[in-house]
Image 1 (cartoon, helix red, strand yellow):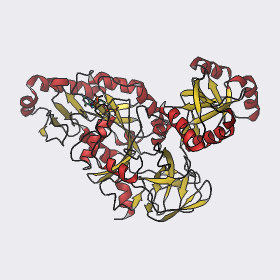
Image 2 (image 1 turned 90 degrees about the vertical axis):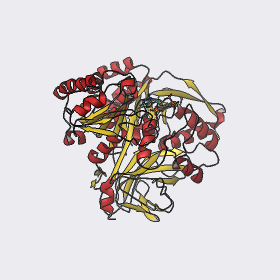
Image 3 (image 1 turned 90 degrees about the horizontal axis):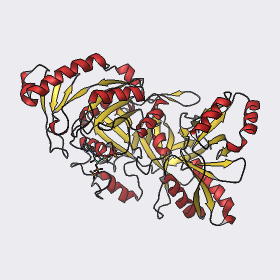
Image 4 (image 1 turned 60 degrees about the horizontal axis):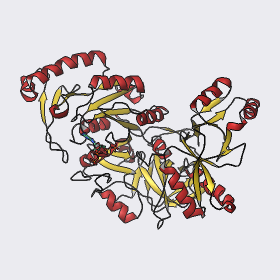
Length: 526
Ligand code: G4P
């Protein structure tokens, strides 16, 4: 097939949600639709301790690395869908944020009983940086949940995005009957007990069809008609342009557990979400269907298994085609790299996959030479932008168990920070070493890697920092002046950038008010 046809088939997205909203369950159902698993089990073992018998587990065994669920590629309808995992629970990290810089759209999953939760708000802020188009799935309609109108209002209010319901639920909990599709003027009826398979659905065309009264009950049918009148008056119609601009989100209702409604969302994704978009390559815009391959690294996954010290750098292809043996230039160092064994992620057909296209993700074996944000090309000097560091929210002071290892500690932390595993700050006023992270597990990973890879044994102590901001000013004089005045709260990060470490949010607010000439930034371009 023509590479440009392949590229236009790509839909690369990630799921943003608060823990427990149903991301894992939805992922499982998506793989079911993608024909990657016949019976949806559990993608990752949680409470049940069960692991899926999906191909991902096989791949993990075969390749001896933990790539499970990092990237899942599957065919659906005429598209090739790439779903990038956004680590969520304990493994929440900066990687979660940065993964969102590598997608072309995102699916927001909301628990209908809980509405908009804190993690979702943060992830939406990250999507905003690039105006990523968002589809919304309101989950758990098989439970007694909140009034759907109220949930939509909350999304619009809190997340500042217009909602365009594509489907509307009929009943909820034990009386959940199905959804009405506003665009197709069709009711899709829900049947329980089909959560593990692709639903065998019955559809009723038309809102005033007496068959609808018979199928869901006359009361529910009437309530639906009344509610829809209200909804259509108060909400927005779907508008492709506004969706693509990140200003409006199509909304779907359903139950991931009951495997109902996920396919409606998937149909929407394939139909409306953008194929790979042009990217800013620093020197110029890079078009996805250019013949030559380009891409950037957005995540480096360290292997916690000591037998495999190898790390995998995840590269998003921005243009062209990867094939086995391709020679690429790492633009930061100018070095050439021949890729004989990049990982590709088309589950099921992995033995045959020796090529990948713009929109796809490939995994490069990395022995410490690749950094987050690295651009790779077939020779041209480019630098993809928009892969930032995000201000950490958790902080710990590093204390060495052996004080003589201070040099190794600095080296290790600087390298781990370059790789994106953590952020490190050196306060100006003392010799402390402060680590910053966005997820707690990052601290454990860093301690384990310092020990395993650098022979440094350390522990953590609490430190009075609640948030960090990179500081900038228009002139050096303003910055120097600020450095003198706020000396006690300032630090240099691993790359030498001046950073304000605020003990409290109130302190940060005051600093902002006192120093209007200073910009306090939540992200820093790599
Ligand atoms: P996450 O990855 O976003 O954290 O969520 P996950 O899919 O693991 O779902 C969190 C919990 O919510 C799970 O229950 C899951 O079964 C349940 N759940 C997901 N979708 C639905 C739904 O549509 N309806 C209902 N009623 N429940 C849903 P759990 O008891 O925490 O875990 P498990 O023991 O079932 O694995």
